[in-house]
Image (cartoon, rainbow, N blue to C red; front, side, top):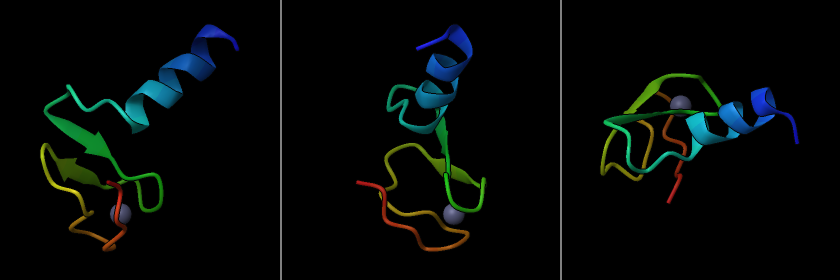
Length: 44
Ligand SMILES: [Zn+2]
């Protein structure tokens, strides 16, 4: 896995970040929230 792929994966499931990026709508999911407020995708 290349560095860029690793960064992309980290961006999606980085639970330590203040916010995560929704893989479906690319919206912002606030930390601690298990569901995207934009599209309703359940992450956790
Ligand atoms: Zn979403």
